[in-house]
Structures are given as structure tokens and as C-alpha cells.
Image (tube, rainbow, N blue to C red; front, side, top):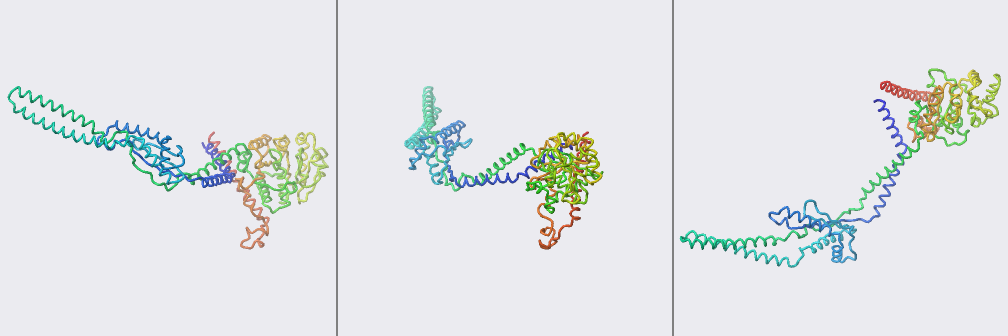
Length: 580
């Protein structure tokens, strides 16, 4: 369970680092998308919408409407809804308003209000007044197409009302005659008279029933039938456009731009599996990252020897921090031989080895830098020395002539053993017993021997040499070294029983590094031109930082990083033990 939580934390940190690296791209895409949407919408014409409402049928005028009445009215409303966008209605409306064109059906919509006989007619137009007039006129044209517009309707209603009044009088007269005949029937004594009165009553009742039936048939026609349309609500003048919605469009564009940028970032990260941060290197190699070295603009090897050419630069301070980390990584036993390795070529291994040898020599140790890359040696170019003789000559020669091949450098206490002639069998030469003897003899003359090795995954030379030294430092190149290569290199070195002390993230940038150490120094330089620690003095009067103070800060930072890494490693081991 704890292991799963730890894995989720690692994945979350990877996503966090990814967002920290690419936040500028996501923000830029959001701003560009929002800006483009704003400019586009401001250039678009404003669209206004007006709505008029009609009611179909006369169900509301009836005292006791039936469900059938509502059903018929709703079905008629659906029919009229389809008629609204037809050409006869639109043409008649345009002709009535004296427009020079017929409104497009795409700009006219109609909908029935659910469970009612109300029909809403909406018109969209660039002119608000024209939209209002069209909405009302289309409603009137729809009314004119219905039986409501028949000019004889009112005359027929007046005639029906007169007939109903006459029928009411006849019905009342029949009622009176029935009552008279009923009284006569009660007073009659002869059978013939009784029979006659009964026949009269039956005739009067039939006559009254006929009047009532006719009255019932004529009465609904006063209020009109179900197929009738009336204007219920005229359109009002719209004051705000419905399109374009500038704010909603801008926000949507910004969200879409950010989403597309985020998808592109995920695609870039998926396709590019190179390491980008110190935390990532530490997780893959399972060792602490002792330093993050910033990218240097210099191209030549000599210019990249920054600890000599620019000893007060932030990069030089990072190498001094690396020196302190190496010292505390080997606190359990003396470190006499150190190999600087990398997964592949051109990852900064040789430059790191050279600068690290310089800072160790500056600390007062007698240091020998050995160019054991017998395939592509470069250390003689870094220090601008001869490569006519070197390691191959020392291994192939006798015991008495080893120091003859060692050259002094311009740095005090630092010497160089160049590669010498490139042999046909570098792996066999480095793995020979004679090579072990040479290393032992050199230990007697120097406090620390730094080996610049070939790439670990390219040839087997590095693994062979790693088994003969006290510690190995793995150099990774930010943006170039692949994650799988870091894992394979660490595994290869461990299989060779090498003591992997730590790793270095080379060519790192502040934006891509999630490690943090070293970048606090990258914004100022030591010396009188710095005003960061001037204690209130002016820039020209800033007190220079003492070397002892600088070493103490390096020591404190390295101890802090080393302790944090040991805590993380202990936590992982405890989680693994509890799962077991």
C-alpha cells in the first residue's frame, strides 16, 4: 500500500515538473487563442433577436374545455410551427414591410411552448427594429393564413347569436305550453280529454327537444372553433445582441488553446523520454544527484574548463558543491580513485571530470586526471597538453617509467595522464593485471586519481574500469540522456560491482531543473562586483566571500542533500520490507 502511494507521489511530481517546464507554452497558447478570438468577435456583426407569441385555438375561452380540445389545438400549433419558415409566409411578410429581399429561413425559428397552445416566432437580424417588425409581421401573416382571417366570420357570428336568441324564446314558449297542458291534464275527467292532453304534451316536448338540440349545435360557433390563431404577445425591441458573445467566446478559446497546448506538451513528453530534472535522475539511477550544472555557452574544451577560466562563476560554485558531495559520499572509506562515467557520448563526462579534478586540486589535494577513454581521448585538448605518450605507454612500459608519462598542468597540485596512443584492444588493456598495478603505483604518488572513462553503454571499457576504482560518478545530460539509458547504465555499473556514489545533471536550466541546489548562486557572482551580501554597502564596496566560508556553505548544502536522499531511500526500504 505504501509503495503504491509512493509511486503515485512520483507520478504526480513528474506531472508537476512537466507543467513547470512548459507553463510558458500553455500560457502563450491560451493568450494567443483568447486574443485571436477577441479580435475575431469584435469584427463580427452584432445579431439581435425579437420574439412574438401567438395562441392557437379558443380552448381558454371555453368554460369546460375537454382534453380533445387541447390535443387538437396542440396539433394545429405544430402545423403552424412548420408553416412559419415556409416561403409563402416569409414572402408575404417581406412584401408587407416593403423589404427588398425575402428573409432567410435560417434566421427565423418557431417553437411551441411544451404542453400549451402557445407558438413563439423568433427572428434574428443585424438591425434590432427590423427584427421586431419581422417577428410581428410573420405572426400576422400566419394569422391571415388561418380561418381567423375570414371576413365573413363576424357576420356569421351575429346571425348565430340572433338564431340563439330566437331559439331561447321558442324553448321558453314550449316550456310554458307544456305547463299549461299539464294543468289541463290534471283537471280533465274524461278519458278522451286525458288522452288528448297527453298527446299535446308529447308533441310540445318533442318540439322543445328540437329547439334545444339546434341551440346546442349553434352555441360553440359563437366563440369560434379550434382552428383559430390570435396574437398573444407582440415582439419587443431587443437592446442586447445575442451574438457574438465576446466574453464566452474568449474564455472558450483560451480553454481550448490551453487544452491543445497541454495535449501537445503530453505528446512532446511522451515522445521525448530524456531526463529533465535532478529528481528524475535520482529516481532512475537510485542515487543522489550531487549537483546540477548549468548549460555553458562555450563550445571549445578549453573554454569549458570554467573552474580555471572563471573560478567565481555560479558554474564553478556548482562544481565545488559536487566536490563536497563526493567527499561526504565516501565518508565511510577513503576515496583514492574516482571514475566519471556517462551512458553515451557527448553528455559532458570529460568536462565534468576535468573541472572536478581542478576543484579537488584547489582544495589542496594532489590530483591526477587520467584520460582512460582510449577510443576518443579529449583531456589533452582541455588542458592543451601533448598526447604523444600517456596511459597506454604506462601500461605497456616498465614499472620505473610510469611517472615519466604524467604531465603537469597550469593548476597547482593537478597532473594529467593523457591516453597516449590509441590501442587496438582498449578493453583488454584496461582489464589487464598490469592496469591494476599501474593504478596501485599511482596511488602512492597522488591523493586522488580521477578517471575519464568511455561511455558505459557504448563499450565495455567503463564497466571493466569501474570494478577497479573506489567510486563512480554518473553524468547525465539534461534533454539528451534517455531515461532507459540512465537505468541501464546504473544497472551495468552495479553488475560490475562498482560503488556508484551519485549522479550529476549536466547542462541543466533553472526552468527544467526541479532540484533547486546551485540555482540560488546563478544570479550573482562573488567578489566586489556583487551587492547581494554587502551588508548595506554599495555595490563597489561589497565584501568578498571568504574561501573558507564558501566551502562551509558547500559542505552544509551537500550534507542537507545527502541526508534528504538517505531519508527517502530508508523510507522506500521500509515500505518494501513491510510489503514483504
